[in-house]
Image (cartoon, rainbow, N blue to C red):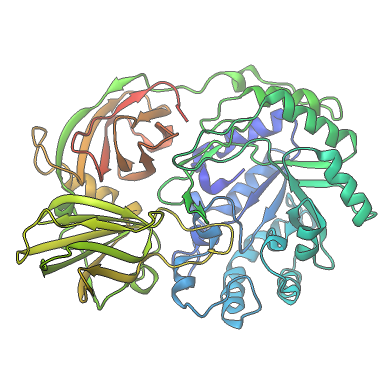
Length: 562
């Protein structure tokens, strides 16, 4: 269960349901970038209150396994690495590079005082701590793993140290470190995986640290599910072998804001929902897997009584249309925000931006002949406007990322705007740590365009601004994309909701200024989960930032479509 993907008001409900399934332990990663938006001071309050989460687990008689990274993968933005860490392109992450290790040491100096006093040795619930994460799928710097291990030990970690890697020697041999128990990750054929462990690591206790009974989704792909009976049979095999098992994921959750990660080669961004086809769904519902897993666990361990109240479907807002309050062109809503001048490239990290978009703007006289705008080093998407009119977009995955300006007459001077979005930082693979933005430049005709006015847009933090300015022109206004549109709805008794975004193109949705996350017509996800704690009694607002379509209409529906 990832506390950072669930509203803190819902932690108790989800942990209680995990225990009811028969679990005696909860595992969580710790996302460095979630806690440390700047390098100087980490945040551990409100939805970042890791200590409160661990204490709550202990109150509910759950032990805790903590996987502090600093790399976590997890389909999370950049695998947990903060954008500011990547501002120095010389840093070799996940190595013995002193610049990297100094940053990790400074982060752990703030994190470990939260964990150390909550260890079982001190009366707390923390029973194990992981060293790095799946390092055998990345590097061979054993000295770095030893340094990380010693960093934990020197800070007072006395509980079991573990590592976690794929289920074959090629992986775990690169991720192991002396003094830490190796564990393996897989989703099927447990008997084969454990036989390899017995053969190659004799005497090692059997543990699957990540049992992938479900999977995550990318935009433009199918929604992944797995048969409950099939994965329950695999669980039975593991428990019969005397193994320990960590469900990945035990609890479905959400990539709120812009916290989703991405895979690379080819680039594929993870969707907003992190339901993962889990036994406890994104909205807390108990699924068929919950009952199948509980039945299997009950064959080997005593089960707590199942409170009928836990089985009740979470309360949900009824299907309803929303009242349009007003709209405004997106460019108007961000007018006046701080900007800088960039000579050619415009890179997120160099401009102090972790997530969101860069708005590049300049005047340009359109050349004779070739009026093709070509992007070099684009990460990830460029949306182009000429004199405020949407012309087209290009993507890093395009064979040739271009937008034609040939509809406009040669010799005409125009206001050229390029909105460069990050769609999520890569969280696994060789592109881990890559920069975002227009990392080389834009080429018009036969030459680079130099000297841009660039406005960083931390879109997940601009919800209240967009809601305010996005209703400036009234309910009857009609604006072309990209556009901000604000809706209102009244709630007597806040409950969970599902915002139906299936009629929209591509963009972001906000509720009462909080960024729910991304949506896209390419699917598979068609609804966004709205947790009840985000709503208030009385008037509430939904703001849509739509990049592609002029017509913007949204409704609440009474069930998710993932």
